[in-house]
Length: 390
Image (cartoon, rainbow, N blue to C red; front, side):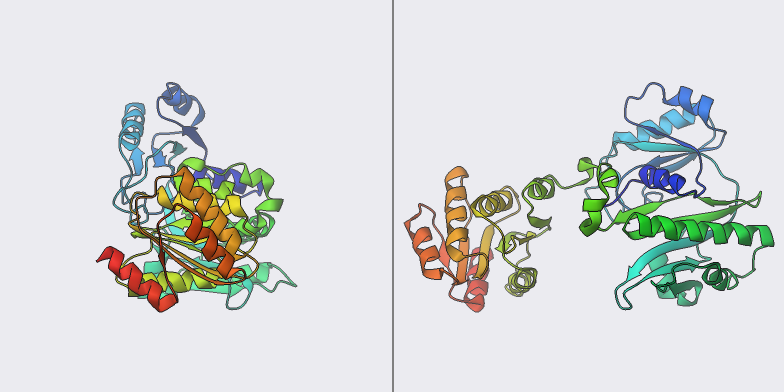
């Protein structure tokens, strides 16, 4: 689960991380200018679009202004049209909130983040003096500028580890700044672990001309598997940032991710789902979704998953690929047949059933009013998919 920048900074404040003062506003907020004048030092001020995507500055979603009139103009401009970045796609994202912050006199920009390194099964602190840039580009072109240190789970973060990173900067900061960096690193580690983060990023982490260390930007992603113990953080989840079909799928505990293709897929098991997506691509088509209904799905979940797939206007055919185990084939068939009665199925349906109660599942589908094609195996499924999209 991702947090907006203003939400991430509020989390940072709770852990003592220094961030600029700011105000959050929505479209039509008549008190914005008055609040900026009363509560924020400036000019300058920085007006930032709040969406779950990087590259906002390059897309026109971050504007530095020097008058209250310009704050208003910048806010209206950002709200007026979808913000397009590399991460949003060409359609962009509608901005429903902005963050207005005090300007900062920047002397130096750094990069600081924590992630989980799955190769070593340890949290890792990443540090770079190439702050304010795309860290992926920095890592590709100048990997020597990206420093990292794995954190022993039995020891945790130490000032020694912090200094091992800081003393690789060129030039090495003066003593007071080093002390500030050590403090920020320790607090970022505490926030990362306490909030069950998969990512906690500050880019840029700036050193001001006054010698202060400040988190000018903030990004936090929470591990979805830990949300059951992060209920206060989960309450911050913004449904406006999610695809409507993915949001609907969440209500029924369906593992659904919407993609850009034209072949819908319903599968049980993540491995089989990935193999099915490969089959679709090998057939010359593109998957419209990832949908793993899981082993514990009941008829209602199956039916709802089928409905969600059909609500995607891009879908030109649906491939249902089930290997009956915990999820029996007859349960799947009943759910699909029930859903077909509720929605107008206008696209070809290809079904492959194997495993527990396979024959019963096929009988249920045969006796339903739904028209479908039966695939004998994965190769046959690929051929049938090809025929539907060619």
